[in-house]
Image (cartoon, rainbow, N blue to C red):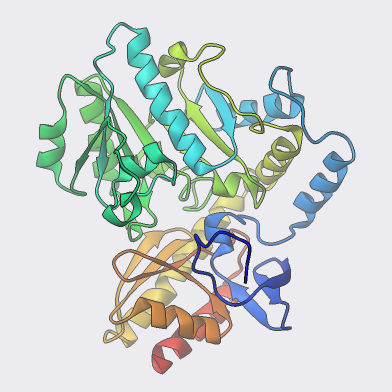
Length: 387
């Protein structure tokens, strides 16, 4: 019997090693990994540059307190600022922590400018923002919040896609609108560009902040550094994690100059956030992702993946009802039991992960090739015919 608390429904398998898009189990089997640690292993398993970076940094310095200047942290923050909308970055260890920072920064901003009554955040049904109490009640999924009362107040939820309800929900106490640019757990629902433009306009009209959660869809996953860049807008606050660490625990919250005014010494912090080892890995990830042509290749391979998935949808409409997503964040909607489909996919030596709306989520590393996409399509088709 395992001594690990039973908070996960795990498959009865463990992995010995990984390389690129493949995982090798302790039983000797090889699997095509289109989970990537749920969009975490952005450069695949054991990328040479990341391995060398960890080895080098581990021999120099792992951790010091944020009471001191950390050069690797300064470097990563500046690179994120230089390549995004942001003026400042605060480092955490996970997406949930980055979400918490976002909530605090939004509330603190209005308190700082003399409007403390503006402290509520509008969120959307189907969202997922993390597992801490505040992030749980921000998303307010009935299954996720059950048994964790009393509820954390400060959030007003509206139905996803209900523009009228959103407008009605804005009042004198509204501080921000918070939404995932692409809902991941919620079923790979992509916010159309016109909706993102509309959200930015709505926030500007009502003097409220726009928080775009890019924990899963950011850091190159859609073929742009951030998914919201496709709409040509700039948010005020963006929590990130997952892909920025390439497999190493790393989260951050990016903010513009305007909203940073309330965050003074003592208002936020993290023991481990921004440590030299994590920062070195984050910089190594950016070395690759920001390299000329890398994101363009993600766009090309992502479009190819979409084309091949849509061919399967056309060929097997009795099993595949929809293909969703952008870049290398993809989902196929299954007619039938998605858990059984995932089980069969696993039996065929490919890894996927479920999402809401009967979605099979497919998140290959950003270094995936068209040949590996072809391999995945063959396995998915075999799974469809076996299903």
